[in-house]
Amino acid sequence: MAPIRPIISIRDLEKIYTGKNSSVKALEQIDLDIYEGEVFGIIGQSGAGKSTLVRCMNFLERPTQGTVYFDGKDLSKLSKKELLTVRQSMGMIFQQFNLLMQRNAIDNICFPLEIVGMDKKQAKERAYELLEVVGLSDKAKAYPAQLSGGQQQRVAIARALATGPKVLLCDEATSALDPATTHSILGLLKQINKNLGLTIVVITHEMSVIEEICQRIAIIDNNRIVEIGNVIDIFTNPQSQTAKSFAYPGGNKPGMSIGSRLWQIIFDGNSSYEPIIAKTVLECKAPVNIMFADTKNIDGKAFGQMIIQLPEDENLSSRVLAYLRTQDIIVKEVEASVQQRSD
Amino acid sequence: MFSKEVTEMISFGLLETLYMTLTATALAYVIGLPLGVALVVSEGSDSSFVKGINTILGILVNLLRSVPFLILLVALIPFTRLVVGTSIGSTATIVPLVIASAPFIARLVESSIKEVDRGVIEAAQCMGAPMSKIIYKVMLPEAKPSLIVGAAIAVTTILSYSALAGFVGGGGLGDIAIRYGYYRYQKDIMLITVALLVVIVQILQEIGMKVARIGDRRINQ
Image (cartoon, rainbow over all chains, first blue to last red; front, side, top):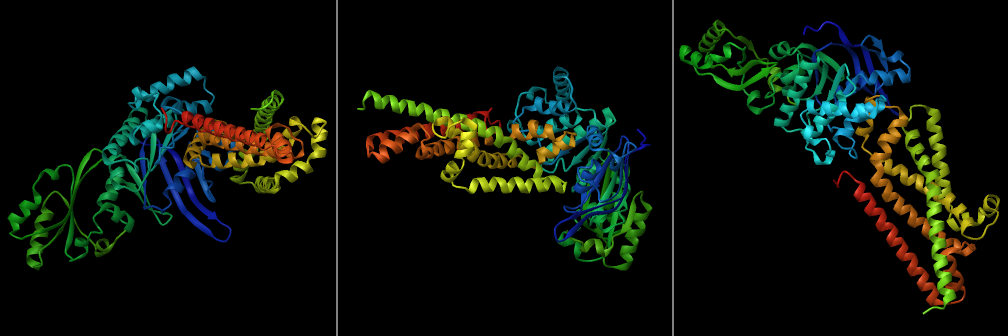
């Protein structure tokens, strides 16, 4: 599943909202390529501009400047009618599910098919197939009000898939769900990505969502993309302030801002089985203080990271460092700026 | 209690009132519903031309709504004559009733449609739905319960307007109440007509609310 061709390309995009007396810059200097078949994440704090960015991808919001290519087509050059047709090959799901409340599950899935003008009987058949894909065959006649949040999102996914889109845009699709439901919805998205080869764009403010399903991410802050790359690279070696705050989610805990001599150690799949800290303490006869520890499952691989505080004694701490460096792990000093960052 | 003539007159008045109210409501919806939709749709448009139309429609609706019905009733007499050939009787009353209530209904429809979740409309836009399909597949069906409640309010308002038309020989129960009860001090006739009007309002309002509730999939299975 090597991604080769960009399905969405954004070049020098800018979006300014003009009010009566003032204008607000929502996005600027956005350059982005999303490849066919990948799960691409866009992460940022609320208000960073990520929802605007995803709405520029299907021209629900018209960029003030720059171009968006979808499947080789420059969206700004399309007529209104052509744009509607292009949107039919992009599915979208939302934080609040946005199902038609007066239609039951099956009729909700039929809705996009009615728009493309599919025969009613055929549409029903397709809707039942999709309901099975999302695991809700027994809820065909249920109305959204009778379904749980997770079930509603499943119906929304089935609805988004109905017209056989090339891309699925997910705007904070799990932000209104509890962790267990989030996990199951992400699992479903992963499965759809694998089975249908569908490109998925995930907008979120939660690092855990990115870790669970994305291969590449863009970090967006203050209306710009500040970092873009593979999840593992950004997670282990974040460059920007924003990336760091997502990679070390405990960064604003009070314990982090006291003291210095903080070092980050990163375990990959193999070394996470070794009791490295315990061995270090025994070997060097020096205490280390664990400030932060976390194990993550990034795209199927186990990843652990820890931030430890070395002993005050220079000799002891250099001995500990020297020992750690002989191990099969990544060891990095944590800059003070990370410790003081708070969101 | 009443003589046969009076009973007949009152039952005929009742029928006239129902005829005026229901016909006027139906016709007013023919104008008011598209007008209400137009108010919503034109408001959100990007084009300044369409926005201009929205402003003009808004002013027109407000203008018609601010003229007291009794004055409108009199002012419209020449127009009513032109349309139905006479300015008295229940059929003639339907004309001013429709003109007075259509803008009111347009506002009711507008507010019902605005209650529809923006997100649902956005979802439809994402699927590439053209405006026409968004109107009749999303806005109207999703606003249905609220539209029905609005219709119950509209029909009762039109009923009270129709009673007012009795002042200018409009026919129906209002006419009877004014001619017998007010001008001739026959309090018993006035009481019975007013009571009948109250009962009709109660029934129409109840039916409207029930139908809206039964049809609402957010609360009813």
